Length: 379
Image 1 (tube, rainbow, N blue to C red):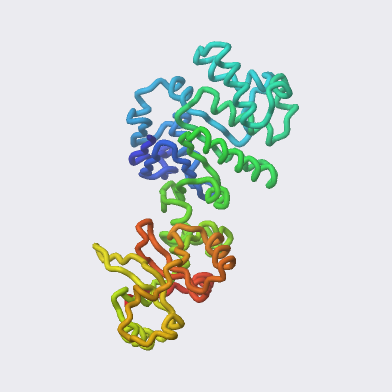
Image 2 (image 1 turned 45 degrees about the vertical axis):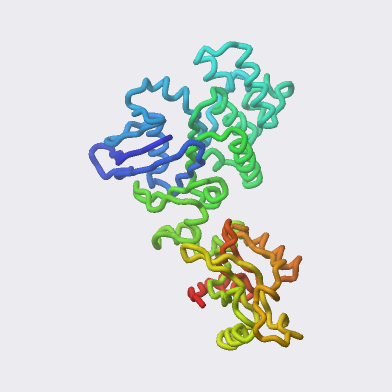
């Protein structure tokens, strides 16, 4: 959808503000450029709609080099939202939203229908707000109008340059939620600039962490939180930030790989020896599959052996099969709720094919929360 290839930008032949930057953005992705002031994120954003021309490199939108397009034509197909909104003060809200569609010679009835629809979407009803002027709205309301104006011509791409940074925290959070709701409805390709890592984590499908004009790490919020690529990213993100956003932690992040397993064909006598060897009273019963995977069949605890006189009895015949299986991508908060509700001590984690991946216990949760990573071990 949007491709930046080896983009550089320097002024007066001096050090590059943007330095050999590569970035690929898929259609419908919400990508956040984040970094400290002066790192080059806003310059990068402005080069996408040619408000600033790169010193070298190419930018493509839908496979077309943007240098081949007329600037005005390019910008009419790119929504643009900035920090101070940029509404025309002497135009009504209706007129502001209609700006780009009118430039594109859309029919009046089509424009009016779009205005009414968008004003309803941003929760500023047409009947009440259409003929007001920007000065009659709060900062948050003005920013809503700015977003509606960016959507009015149904652009493929929307660029947003720190649009909420001047707002109070409550209004800012409300507008972040509003933007996520709009993105869910419209599915636009959004490139969003911020210096606030919390905002980046909340909004982005992907985050590009920029320093000195270079992308240091480009990945999902979860991956950047869990596996910062270097000390700069770790410091910028904050070492304890992952614990402030528990929904970023999934079952696979809090499980232990130390699962003591037994095949369903094993006898009681054999299983007791395995339990003794590994000092445990609970085993996962599995079935061998292709490609070194093992399907979870059930759980067997030492209590299942009571009253069984035949020590040749197989695990598949006495195992507990109504086991609560935890999907590997279930959020931590949901895992904790299920464990509490069901009073679970051992929670096997499985993939989509119900292959056993690990097990969640109170110890494994504490290990993760104290940032001790259990070593992988096979039995």
